[in-house]
Length: 119
Image 1 (cartoon, rainbow, N blue to C red):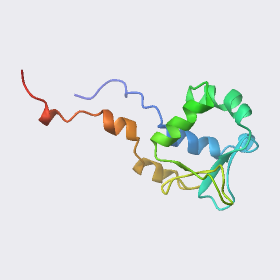
Image 2 (cartoon, one colour):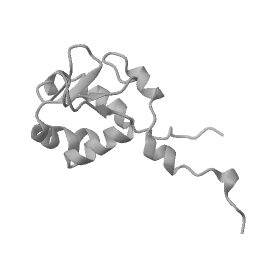
Image 3 (cartoon, rainbow, N blue to C red):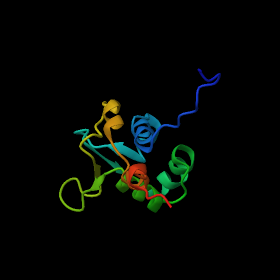
């Protein structure tokens, strides 16, 4: 039987992030690096106030950093890309690659029902 109403599907964190990075009005706060393989939060306080509550339903930048890490983003600590975030499947102009990304915390929380003992 087909449902009368399609279930609501909320975009994933990475899809929201990709959309935010494509917005011209937010480029002074968060943007891609010129090569398009990593991105950077330019003004953390502005990002926390103007972007987090609206697009990610978050209040703290630390929560955003945790989510980014759960999705496999690595943050460069040194070098020319210091402070930027990178994931091999998160590239400017290629949002379809986000569908291949996995959230590590969701993967860990799934239970393998075949291995649950019966009482």
